[in-house]
Length: 201
Image (cartoon, rainbow, N blue to C red; front, side, top):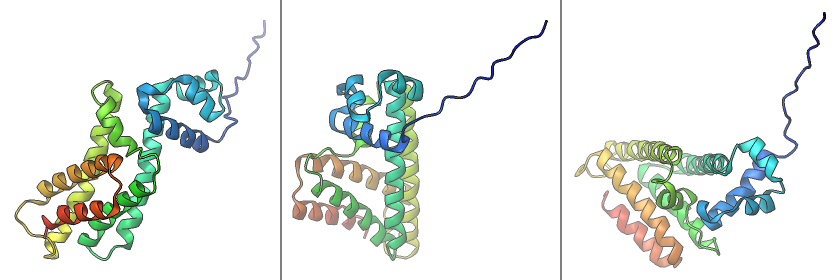
């Protein structure tokens, strides 16, 4: 007796994943994770619920991809700033000024999705906590390299180690982005940047 075998073809997505992630990012960024419903995601992405579950597994699965998507864009933007700057001091200032542009050009004052998520979700889910820890480690490594280079160039002082200054800058960046949610006064924020950077010189 012959056995018949049915070839099961993998499901092919009929939508642009990047566009869907971008639209989902807008919703999560505006409402936060807990404030976003599945219906919000359906409305924003034009996908039905079954497509969302089939492609992302769950609301949390989609959110994790949104965080990774947002992180990759941020890394790309930081990379551009790093390549264009002449030295470590200019690079760090350029990073702050990049965030300043985000603040003053955002009429909704949404802040940073990752910083917002850290305060909302880090202690609620181990996957998100792990993502946040990895994101922090990567950013600290970038900042530590910049500070180390600045110290080698004799642009930055050596009152603290590169590791210590990296944590200081990381905390300052996070605070700067949170401050921008309520205060988008460009002059005041520029003065804040200068105050932060003075510590290094």
